[in-house]
Length: 496
Image (cartoon, rainbow, N blue to C red; front, side, top):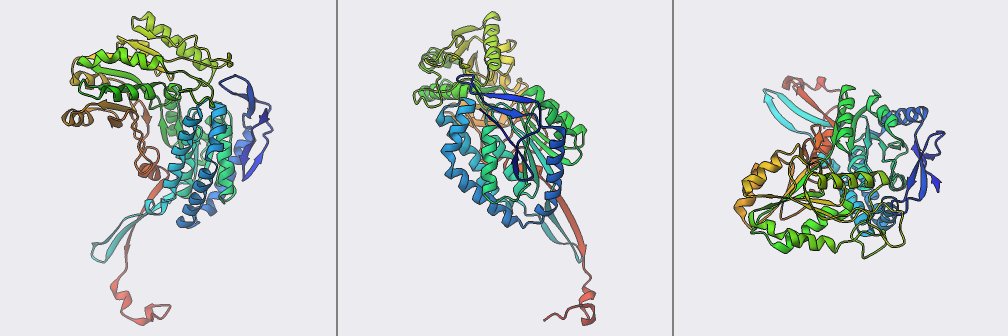
């Protein structure tokens, strides 16, 4: 067991706090580290230092900032498997899943290395006679990020590389449940040649988050997490005059038409519902079978019954444990509610065990059919390996069902009909749509665009929208009189 350090002013230092939080291995619930609740003085130090470093960092040419990101992505690739192993042991993810987490973060860093073209303004000559207008894209100042447990590599890398590449300084507050991966990211960032102080890492819980949300020196806050916390982050941050992007919960539907490829549907549903133990904001938690497609539910049950959880280095395991005993208890409670409210429990993941790991937070694959919109198993984000099956008569019924959901993070449609796909992607009120793709997370040159109750804010994560989130636009209208150039005496330097 070790004490996780803070990263303040370019130095990894031990906190002086008396308040520590245990970091546990979800497969065993053994304590593997302690993370500090950063003191008020240490928070002040992080914010003040980030503000001071911003004064010089914003003046660094954008091409030089891009080169830091190029070196950083090279180091992340070099240490890819090492980071994934750290991530696996503190989250419980399988090694393959952990490698995917790291790689998706690397892709965003690669995008940040292209920042010069993203920072280009606009120009129009002669908007009026002898008057030109042009714009510059300039950084905001000190920005902050609050990240969740489920993607401890990818989501921090959604945030600080782009913010810093844009010329800002950044304070990262990673999840207290798995801080070891973000700390390794910070070590490699320093090794990449980032100036000391452009990135600070603090730890803790609500008290530390509230400092980031209320301190006037911080200009923008990015958050990924659950619904009630996401709303609190947005309301508190904006009330304190900050720019906020807050990614909250989800209830993602996969609509299946009877003309779809049956085996592709089954494979997609299994991977998208229980992969990463269902602890993904883009997981498919609801399958909507249209018409005769509902006859495939027994085949989905058979496929899910063959899936098993296991340790991170068990190559036969499809997914790992959920993050904590509290998460396991909540998931099992929702399974019980679903059964009590009349849904048909086809597979029950409660009481799941894994050989030689009796104390892990295991939940087996769980499948319901006959789920109705008023049931808790449908209304709440379960965040576990649980798939709820619903049955409707037509594609229009499926569209209405999805559009009536308060969430709008992601959805997918499986069909062989171009017309049905065109109608679905046009009429659906969801930010990210997959056609015969179960988890439609866009690559970083697009943006992650959740809608409705899944997102509070204006500009989304990564892509061009993130650059706009982390910058301001300055527009200049200039007039230079042509008569000024008529005599040589008006020039302080002779033009040759």
